[in-house]
Image 1 (cartoon, helix red, strand yellow):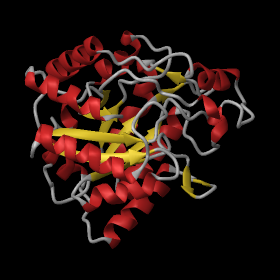
Image 2 (cartoon, rainbow, N blue to C red; image 1 turned 90 degrees about the vertical axis):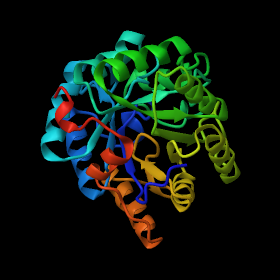
Image 3 (cartoon, rainbow, N blue to C red; image 1 turned 45 degrees about the vertical axis):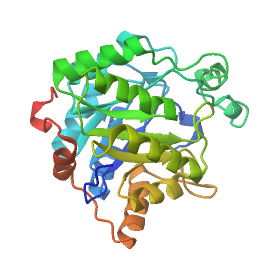
Length: 310
């Protein structure tokens, strides 16, 4: 694993899984997304991972016009690296997933490295949902796997990586996904350094036990040697424990309301920036320096904020 000397903090501002009824603090409108993203950058996030939502009911949306309502504002107000999803949400077509990134030509996008069961239906009856689509989204996850097949992965690498100079946050939910990254590297479709984002605790992926962190790291070390930067997060309660462990071995971290709605046991986070400030405090207490956006760009070999289309 390449040790950049400083930990890169990524903040996943608003995702496709958590829904508005689950937290009043989840940003939904373009104004809310822009404001929380800028605040997270000011708190220390070098990378901002972003989804778009319908401002009317909070439904995940692939509409490029919605992205363009908040991306330029974030760029103007911060120097953070902007990272757009290609994972989208259940029901999105391939064209939906690519619409926003192809329009914006960002420095980075996320890239899920394999199809999988992605289960969050146990939440379906735990909330009083404001919108009908919210509970249905939860229930559907029991029946429909998240589709990230090899042809789609290759298409994203070619169209965004080859065509736009976009680099990727490789989202790996299990050990097999690391081998998929290696496969595409061997084909010459992607080049180091690889930002390997290991994700723990999704039902259908590798579990959120700390022993599994070392399983993923040791596999990545074998596959990539010094050609990768490891980052990680765990969904829900184990979030901070996993990030601390990753940082202690020279890795980076990801926080944000996409990954956990909480700041402590039973206490909802009031903003993304609150989570950034918490993890930054932990890392600095361990004498780990935090990378600036410029340093993150240099570590990851990004094309720069002046080469995007917003």
